[in-house]
Length: 296
Image (cartoon, rainbow, N blue to C red):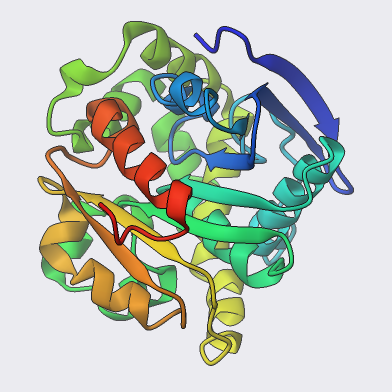
């Protein structure tokens, strides 16, 4: 996987981030979701690298990136801290302006990155998410049942850590069950996710990520409610997933930017880049070539 990409360990101001870089052209940052690593982009990154300089890092706490102590308010896993890592990674590679694409947790980091570093982010693409604050404030029984981990992982240390750590492979299998067809995952990718997620430090860090999401992240999000983005946003979601059934995705994102918001559902579940890589690439190329999806 990732033929032609170079692997780097980048020391940021707070931790170390493992990233791969490949291709040539405008800069494009790809951010993975939970409970995965940058490997989730293995089907789409090589194709995108024919058009862009593609950077695919592991988020702090995930994969082989650093796992700093979260602190009493979990601030080390705030999306603000995680976004700062990514700005510094891109600066390390000399990439001062870039497009960012984020799936799942990576989409939340990408959203914060676009808010906090407006001079750097040219466009934002989010895969299968709506903004965190909106999703928490509109939670109903159906959403809570489908996304139970949003509440389970926020429980105090070390309740979720012990339960997940008792059988990480079982838990990983259940979470990747959000795919409409789990057979779309490459065996090599699943093995890599399990290798990383079997590390107790990763399990703890991922819980800290969610603990931050229900605390400090909501503080930051409320502070920014009136501070709208002005960049184009592409929102893609799984037509067989929870987000598309629960929200009017485009309408929600239009409340967060004065720029154009376009997008559509793909014929898959939660894991777009692995379930429908060709459609994901097609949508991204159409959007990134124009700065909007009006030609899709």
